[in-house]
Image (cartoon, rainbow, N blue to C red; front, top):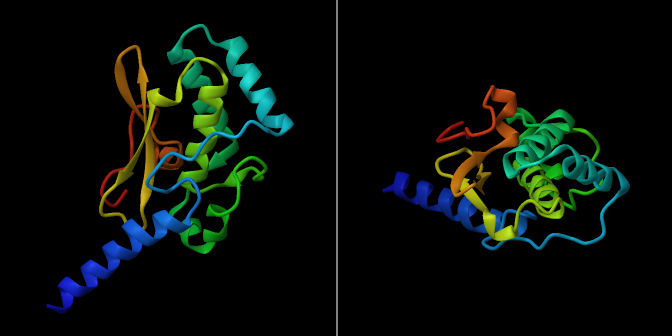
Length: 164
């Protein structure tokens, strides 16, 4: 019976309380801001000029995020404070999944190649901490997009699952 209580408390903490407290991790999509820093405006312009299709735009935006930021299991715990605040002016380096996904969502929508309804936020079950990735509709097909898991060798179209 104690195991049941532990699992229940864990699920309550991870799946409910953390989603209410951590920005961009909630039960609804966080709106995309209109005020963007200069480096993000430049990245959006590069995606616009270097892309001819939705797939190109997704690849360029994904490349920008994974070249600038990375995920890390240990730092997710040790640098948990990076999951709070806004994503716009975070320095390059480690960035939690929620921030990377909001950044990627912003680039994709602001580039004009995607509507926000083309992007769905998904959560992975049974992780030590809740993990988030995106599903992006490209030409009628949904593609899993998980920039945080790029450090694990997962490319565009793949996502962490279970204890990933």
